[in-house]
Image 1: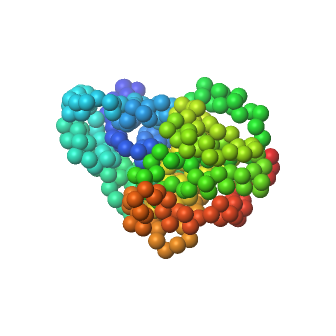
Image 2 (image 1 turned 60 degrees about the horizontal axis):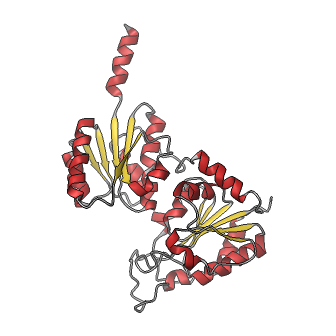
Image 3 (image 1 turned 135 degrees about the horizontal axis):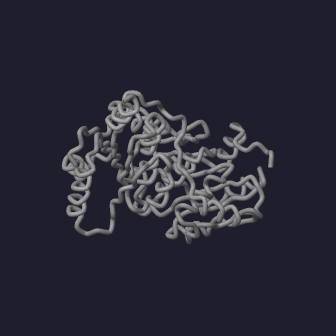
Length: 341
């Protein structure tokens, strides 16, 4: 009788949760704080996650997500896809749906899914990660904030990358200079010539190897970064392989881009160069997250277009105020490279 009672109570208390976060890589990584926190407190609960298909290869490794639901970007009839998903969600019978992207499409999808409870993203004046967590805690009171993000690594990808870079000298610096979104996300990308200068300064000051990474569209752009012990990997790795590379970094450097938040979720040391976006919202989460802020007053405006730039210009005064020497000084001041290599 006692066993039967326990089984009935366990079945009754087991919840089904769905998280909806369709958006940029960084935002989607930040939102994983919710399933991670839930599973730490309620490992028996079902926690599903709706995300873009481009992120499935990365997030499918996450041990705290039970089911990844895919939003397919290439489908022309988005309304039909939304109705199909809503029908599947109604059938699943979710206890709570956390809607973390407050677009009209997602609001309609959430309502049509008919969960027992809808919790929309809330603003608490904290970092993006903490805002997502507090949104979840508003509905699940016993949650505790994890001290880091966690993205699990594909073991085959890790073995492959480890073999490929085994002959290179440590420390490993991984740089994601960006470039494909320079004109649409001004204030978040540093001058490529400065990245090239920084790569050489890293080798001069600390030795080791600098790996340059990015997507295929950035290959030509990143070709400006050359030199001894500088290895170009742009466009050569899949997303799981890139994630594995990030996890092996002794220091990961980037501006406010998706890759730096993936690296942060591997708990490696990350150094973020900031311009138009502010550290109180976007700095890498966890004890190993560091940042450099601009040296001018005009910063943290969060605008995608800078009023001080002429047509065709892309590097904003805020982030351009940071020099390669500033980055080296920050690394030394914070002792981000130990020298034990």
